[in-house]
Image 1 (tube, rainbow, N blue to C red):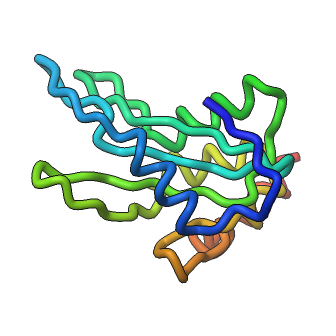
Image 2 (cartoon, helix red, strand yellow; image 1 turned 45 degrees about the vertical axis):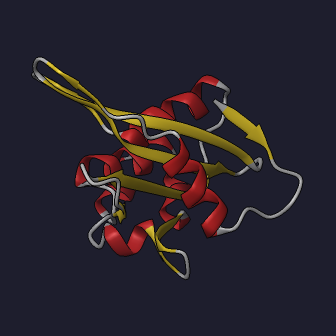
Length: 140
């Protein structure tokens, strides 16, 4: 799912979009949809995704949102946020797991400058969460 944005997207708006798509479903072997992700692409499109943790297959919400972005031919992320809801409907912002951090880097090296939203007033760059990313340049 994507949205056109004619104005600058705030952290609060992205957090709200990520939270709004959380629809938790328990399955026999896991849980679907308890984490929502919203990302703002370089072209100011918003892409959304939810997690699916079922049996031996786990897809993070960030991976789903990035997959939607890639499907539209985009690879660069300006901002990204993931939000988890617990069983009492409380929301918490999550930092991306190591696999998602690496996925963002490998999608496009310029994503090292992606703003990772940690709170409505706090962001860090992906390169701050991947402190030893310099090996990537030597791989090319």
